Length: 284
Ligand SMILES: [Zn+2]
Image 1 (cartoon, helix red, strand yellow):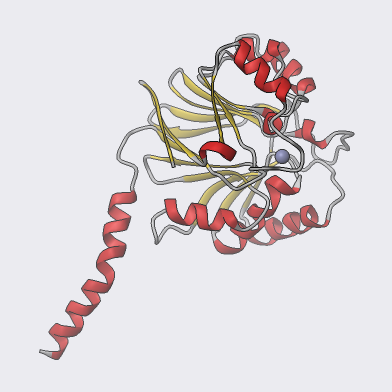
Image 2: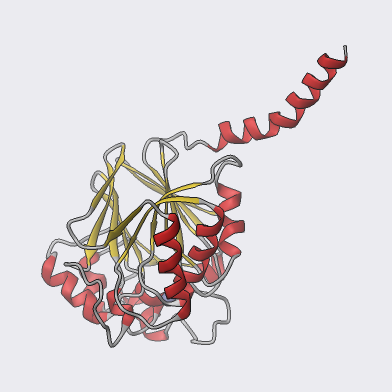
């Protein structure tokens, strides 16, 4: 009798975790893409139908842990691929928290020079804890199943050990797609990189564009927006941020092109389902 009762109690204790695990498995083929509201910074979580997790940037602090903890199943402590677009704190600090809490299998970053204690610590941590470290360049393509992929478009070549006057322009730019449906993720890349991208990829287009540098006027030229021709523009930006982002100039460009705009400072987080047949989105 006692054993039976213990078994029942154990089952009751485990049940919520089992149900959560079951219901949190993505059911659709394709990708779930989460643009997280982490305040003034970038953090994007991608989950494929096999339950693999890709995290691009981690925001400015530990808030990321709470955000991804709400999305991932209770038992899932694995980040299959972590991408640091560039070493500014508003992209980097959250990743350090994730590295401490989760098992990270592969880190993709540029290895560009940047003199900053947090970046040094990040490099130290990954060299100790992460089995695979990949230096970003444009021939890297990750197969995410269901005809989905993540292609690195920029930097064009290995830039590890290089100095940058403006480290924003070392940002990893990637294209997330399922079939012909694409989301373009630009980190904090500015106008100069946008120009390089247009020259190297004259057919560059995407249904969704995550605007470079939090909607700053240093990015998102009219020419770039016209070429990429997205139907949805996403701005990852913090409420009442001290940089007054997004810039009125950028908002004006978006308005001129009649683009639907979603800002995390106003709308909060956003989830996009990306599949071969199209994409849908909802507030998080
Ligand atoms: Zn930034």
